Length: 156
Image 1: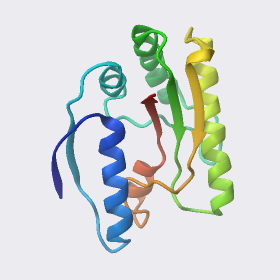
Image 2 (image 1 turned 90 degrees about the vertical axis):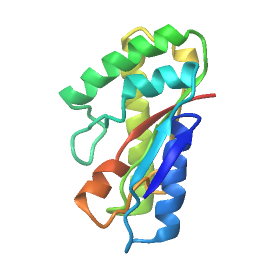
Image 3 (image 1 turned 180 degrees about the vertical axis):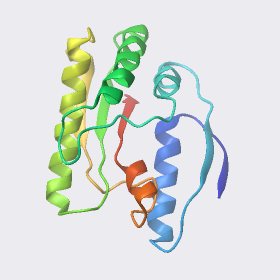
């Protein structure tokens, strides 16, 4: 278990990822860190509210629930104005690494395209795909794998 305050959601997830990787598959990291930062990153973190943007299994097709979350994210992105934001895709570790890296990038691109269609300026969005390389939980349980399949929004 880890508790405390960190500057933003990106740092919260990064700390959890480092701990989960260092601890190994025999341990479960319970992340009780709170993102207490202010400014643009806090606006995005609050809009995402620790929810997972979901896709159809093994694809970059957004589910209805994923689109609903992105509608809220689009409003938050419009609110923060011309700030550059990186859309970062992650996967669990099931399957070949290269396929997961490609899938995470395809999902980040799908999110970017959805946000652009919702009125977010394309020039303000970039994409990255890290595949299974930055887990926030162990990949040995379904719950952990579900938490690792995520999209992050990072203000640059």
